[in-house]
Length: 327
Picture 1: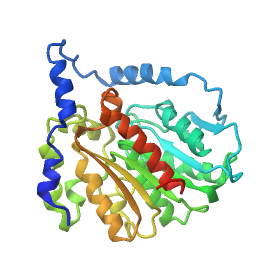
Picture 2: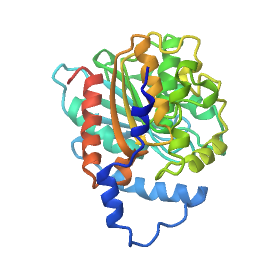
Picture 3: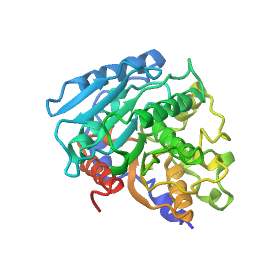
């Protein structure tokens, strides 16, 4: 059972972050949160910088557009085994912003470190396309990638991963792949700060430790207000297995190992903490990194923190663990 007092302590701000924020307290206040069009413009500008070519990798924009562009990052060198693992990455953005370029740094890192073929599909966004469009698009992409392989060898590893809302997609697709007997089968899942639960579907035994939306109601970045705005855009059915693997007929059963990252000062903190416990109960191997006192996706917002540098190393180690290439 999860200790409620210990979980509550995770919501106390990290001292390094507190000192950083104190140091900029006299800076101009941040601008108001932009509207939908403004958010999309902001994300597009950030992602443009990620499109610079990398001479050590091959990057493809596939002619077959799976409801949008699909980036494929491949190593130019042969792996030690002669086989390249396959890693499918979904980007973050609350289901209403984001593109494959968002995962370019991670894709390039995994291609270099592990000789992986990394594929970053896109999908149609809310509010124009509401739930379950994103999940269905990503399932179609995963099946196409699974059939095409793109020069990879799933026997060397076949991992799905995602950050934030896309961690939701990765978890749901991992469960769906198991339920639908997808072959070749997945060998791992990377779930970074995923959205996985709702009060209505929290297992009874864990209801008393599902309180991060109340504790972190005014958290930096993703808070209760912005989370509710995200839900209003996508209008998910929280009882659908495409929203949460806990809605599957046999949640967790037969799933591959999971590497999970959790932020303590995050409205969706308890989603991941509870899901990790559920997976372990079903005999699924898990690796868990918890960042106490830090907000949702802090490594992207505050890259100057030592904790952010640690998180980047953790991601590499976690993927290595999933691919059987590290502890």
